[in-house]
Length: 413
Image (cartoon, rainbow, N blue to C red):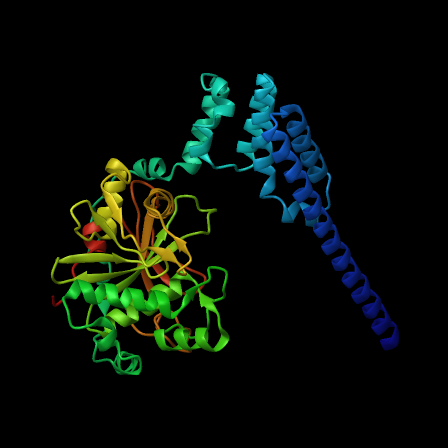
């Protein structure tokens, strides 16, 4: 019987490996097909052969919708865009009803490019149609992040006296002193004014480790271990870990700092962002510092801003009154623009906010017997049921709608 079971297992393993190879081959073949078709579609578009281009889109959609699960999974991001292109080509052939149906289909599949759709001349003749207006409104609620933020509702400002007080680790803590000496942070921060020190430490963290949003978090989540594992394995870390390093750096230099998780309205959107804020005694407020994008934000007069100020200005006038530092970038490769970073990405991710109650070394490192981490969630309007939640990780999330409490000045300053 044991020999029979081993034989069955061997056959099953062989069949599984064969199925994986076949699946991989199908995906590669479909990728090559898609690349060839896209080249033909663009060529037809350049020649204004809209019937040919539209037929190519329809052909791809038909093949995709009858493809294997592996192909469907790997190319699902293409499907909405292909329907959008089909809508454009059909409308350029004066097939209005078919174009509207294709547009509605692309929206139903999750298409979100509102800014392009509202100005796309290929669809201009549809602008007064009620079906187009309905589709565009759905796109706006999904893809115009400033619009979504503007409709988030006012904060309640109710104060729950039972909420915990934010606390910060002193620079005299042994872990912070070790970090400070190991990397000579005094030299990195410099001997000029407070703001220049903030910026110097931001630049240092941005250049010390690279960002990799797809990486798994290392088990040890403190500045030294994160920097060292990145060096050893030639790897990057996600925005949360970069914000952790900068938070530790600021606190090692005697500044009070927090990590802030910035989150979208859409609960199905897993693309949140984490930045660091640092308390400025000079300005008497928190300051926005984003190590992932080497970014900070000012008003048109050059005054550095905090998250609350940026959010309020986005709601009032979009990005008009905001200035992003010119050297904001991703991994020293992709320059960040105000329109994308603030107008889209951070507008999307400033709907609600979360901060840990304690700012300390190894805050999110798992250790046996460690005290449960507590977090404060700041919600706008009626977005949350405002109930204390215990996460599966064991952390406790306290809700509030009061920004005065959330952005309170560090005790003792």
